[in-house]
Image 1 (cartoon, rainbow, N blue to C red):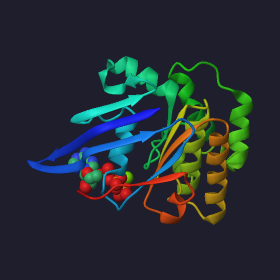
Image 2: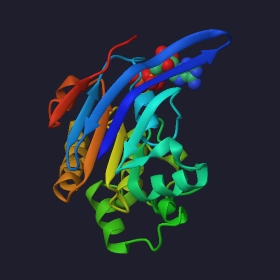
Image 3: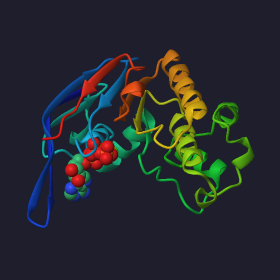
Length: 214
Ligand SMILES: Nc1ncnc2c1ncn2[C@@H]1O[C@H](COP(=O)(O)OP(=O)(O)OP(=O)(O)O)[C@@H](O)[C@H]1O
Ligand SMILES: [Mg+2]
């Protein structure tokens, strides 16, 4: 389902090169829950953004469901991403002037059609956001923002969930709530790529892939 072949990503900052990914390959089957583990700065977010069609690698290819993501024109890639993938960003990227409910509904704007209202309600309830639906991101705790971002990513039951340090700001109880939500999504046929530096969390995935600092 996900075929990453020999991708290299080099950032250039004021003449200095940072080799974030170096000839990296990974293959993920449909329905798998894969954890990408590695130290801070080893390229986890870079890898996830590359899978998600948001950051073009300098070399190599990303093929999802048989589609070479970076061979598509940008608009086609945007629609493909919206239909195929849900993304939970490390920095959440919630829209600051929308409340929780509106933020979760945002993917509907990316041409995905009508909001599945029952599923929306279920996610809000499961992720413990019911009392916060009218709050804007500035009026939320970090963990609440993280759970809002997860609800948004799962709203349309994407084929693939890309989750970046999804439990970084959660207490034990909320880690369990989020992990149960991920397992339910997987049971329903979803594929998960989770990146984290938390070993205990990664051990709960089907498979761990190590990334190392170059
Ligand atoms: N836009 C950028 N320009 C220059 N360097 C960058 C840029 N983005 C990331 N980097 C560098 O690339 C490397 C990989 O960054 P990345 O964000 O992928 O790491 P990470 O594994 O997700 O780290 P963390 O666990 O801290 O989130 C880091 O050394 C970082 O400083
Ligand atoms: Mg990161």
